[in-house]
Length: 307
Image (cartoon, rainbow, N blue to C red; front, side, top):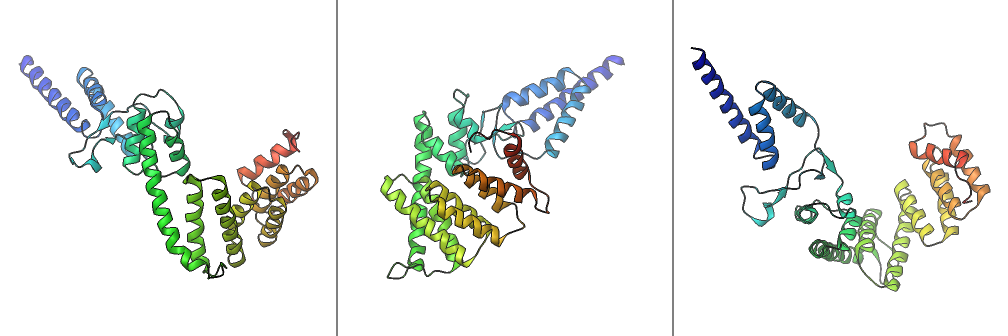
């Protein structure tokens, strides 16, 4: 009688293990499915409890949109079209794709990057540029292909809008909404397109003019900050100071104008003006962000040798 009960229980246990193995195969790598099934098989009851706990935690925790750091096995879907083949298994144990690019020697690095590009998940221009200069020729080839396509798309969109922006004398006549669209396109184009220094500078000057025009029509914080950043990069410090002053006048209760002013005066090593803006930032009635607090902490008790 006892033997029959043992056989029945063993059969049920084997059936449960087979069901668990089958349920793990579609969403996990083969290695992971085998390992978890063996745990269930050789540790009765507790193995099943482990599987249930793992399943519960996996479903409750949000999955990150980056690549599994521990399992680079490619998963092939039932759809045999090239668009849907060789998809990477995503999991909560992840690292940012940008780190995958910068670290040499990761197993499966080529598959990770190429499949991420194929799925159109790698959209950050800085990361694409890094991938383009990768030592692996195949990674570089795929990144160049994506960037070339994006450049062509940007050029077509810019050409379509440009006719609505300038009159025959080259003056900007477009509405603020059209200018905002063009600014975004031009910003991305300058970032990813390879060109000689003269052409790049001409586009940067055009981009700065577009930002200045937007600010005359819509004095929004994001465009103040973009304009200040460009002027600092171009070493137009007088223009940056004027832009910071207008930003502060337009948003006197915001911390953002003071943060950018402090960064500007740190760049030009003007300690008196920096201290003045720092005190104004401290005096704001609102709760300061972590960025503002770190800036105050740095200039109050940190390294002051740079100014």
